[in-house]
Length: 599
Image (cartoon, rainbow, N blue to C red; front, side, top):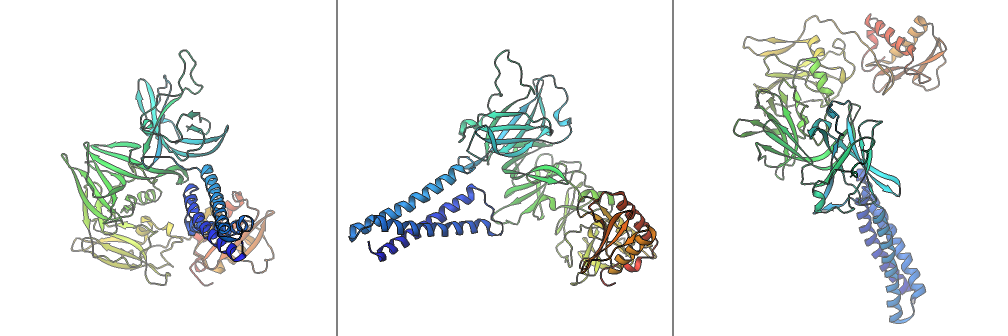
């Protein structure tokens, strides 16, 4: 077979390899759950397609040179051999990749969730809901006798019910693979985690939509399992509720696409990608879209905050749904990304701090998130009274300089105005309190004097900080307006001792001169020995009682950090230094060395 013909066939084989490899790679992206973050999935498809093209060209060329012969018949045989070899190789690689992938089974074209009910042995009187800690359910897949991979989902102890004298607790977990025997593990605590082999088929059918018998089945007279637990299971499609919760006359059904493990305030938790159905006295509440979030509200009547998305409003909108006795009234509130967008307005520092650390789980009915709210709930252009269940909209307010990470810091006694900490200009170096009068749809600003109104980080700002520097004054028209307090005493500067994340004793905002002043203090008051500085280092070191203390300065972020050079972050010496420096700063003699910039 002539070289020119061989090259032409090899090019054709390469094009076929390129296209088919790209197709298989695109399937593999889904099979192996390759993330599209920063184009990862796309790069994988392109690289594998190019590799398939190169391999196809080489295989085609070799096939033509070995199997081809002069003439038309030889050309056809060479081309057929080249294409067949390329197709066979891609089929082999693709089939192997598919066989080794954890591809979730489907039913009626929908992904599946395994629903589980765990039954406690007879004689247990205390409800599992009263046991400390959270519980989880794990679904694993075996390779031989070794668990190869698993997924985790919630076990809802708070939903525990008693039937025939035995406690039953529901849970759920993703059915994430067709491969291997399934192992169910019930995690009640670190020490108590019984496991079972689950007779779930690789490809569940409609028969598995019904509850199984209680398992494991024990022969008459056989002793119970060591832990005494039994379980039953069924599967749910994405359209089927995995959990139905009652809230007064409302029922909230949760449909789950997938679960994911996360952390909430340092606590292990399970989030979900989910949607909801809301019913009132057994009848669906019409909300005009897919429900993606539901939160309970306090008050004399049962009420919900519900977020929906639709083809006409894919940004999402929150609605107030209230039990009116015979019907559920629905009132649109405002655009929102989640029901957790609602921010309670308060001048109570304790409530403000509690709201900043509230526990939020994605993909579940937020029964407790807003249940204690007393002040108005702020959205972008609306206020919801969580007790009276009314909505007040204000469209004519501009939000110049808003800092999203700082929630509103104060609510006026008359309830019509709230204050936000904002950028006073485009430089980002000057700040103000902007007061929004919702009733008048107007705003005014009060400048922040950083030298006297002292704060280090946005997290330091709260209603107590506002109340120290400002006061609400009622005018002759009966309207409360915020004013700077005359003659307030500046708060003392303080550092922040951290032993977990960003360890050390942090002082901010600081000028470079504060580092040298702290070194002088450690030498004079703690009898430290000043060590020679390293060239180009931002640290200065002092040896105290045989231990090296580093004092560093961050010029761009205006901080000074005092830390132990040997990583003894919990060392009593560091704690003593922090206590002593706080006391020294309170005297005021270091005030000139605090600030954002300069020496």
